[in-house]
Image (spheres, rainbow over the protein chains, first blue to last red):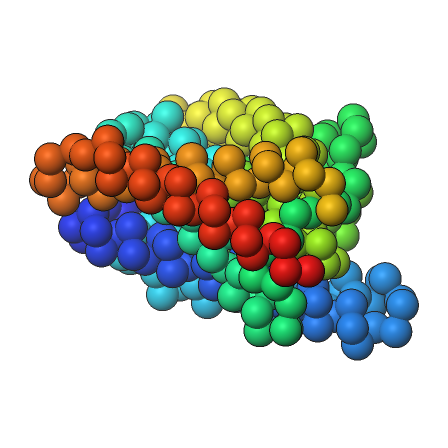
Length: 232
Length: 55
């Protein structure tokens, strides 16, 4: 997830393409699920969950060797904080992720014969939603850093499965991604969020990511692994 | 549609687009042009204002 071998423009293309396809999947599957579910919100959420988890596995598997497949400013910041990603490239990554996410929303909207962008109006605010986002992002970063430490080849599956699970154990349906949250502020469909509620979500996500980075620094440090081997 | 939220959305897209131009100019080795940055940002604001009015 922290590979930086390819030239920056190529990595930015990979990050942009990946984030756009991720958001197009989240928003598009939300529209499709809502239309087909006949008013059953649980079925609609399930129809939104499965494609999101699936596309994450695909995108991370094929794009991680190029850009690290962050698709998420919180993940980019965590890797920069761990000195596994250059701070000088954080701004380009975040800008591209955010712009590409909005393009992804526009693509999904047009695919379903809607206006390319709409100002989100779905109320998603309050302490329970913010806590949900902090927990969801904590879990995501925990899964990624645990995967980096113990099972790098499994990271695409770990991320896909974590998001699939978090859709259902959080009250916010686990956005866990500032770029995706911003992009979802430009749709009034099933996956949308009121654009004035985006900052609260992003703040909670960044707090959750920072907490996970701190915990994982202790939990997955080389000295901790050494102590476990000593016990065995 | 809520006009202040629409304005907020347009400003977000405009600011991100301007930031994208700055990033592009910096990493493409091109001289930074405030005029181009402002034009792209303004165009993004107008485009967003237009498309969000289509619903």
